[in-house]
Image (cartoon, rainbow, N blue to C red):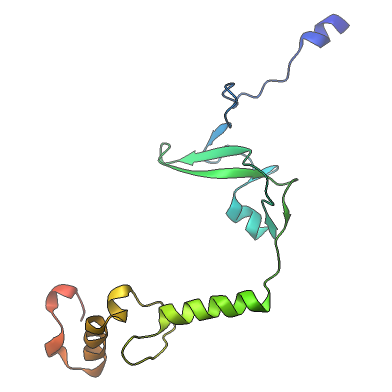
Length: 139
């Protein structure tokens, strides 16, 4: 009986066997020991420098995400005041109109931050629709 036990080998059915990472299909990876970066973030963790343990694919292999081991993950770092100030400054640049320097609650696209985009946006807000081209879909 002991001779038979020595011949048994634990085989992972998802391991390709060529040294590459195992590939799981959508909802096959299990949530007990592997997680994506976003799932780790929801748990208050980060990968912490570890290499991906597996890969999960969806949409026929067109989209994929790396899976990391939860037991090797580290706690995420807290937000510092300097980081928060830098992020606020970056968001202010994306949310500020280039013409009137007004800050909005949403990010403005590149066209709206340029002079022509600001004129078009201000024309719609001010009620002067003569400056607005109907092909832009602005009503």
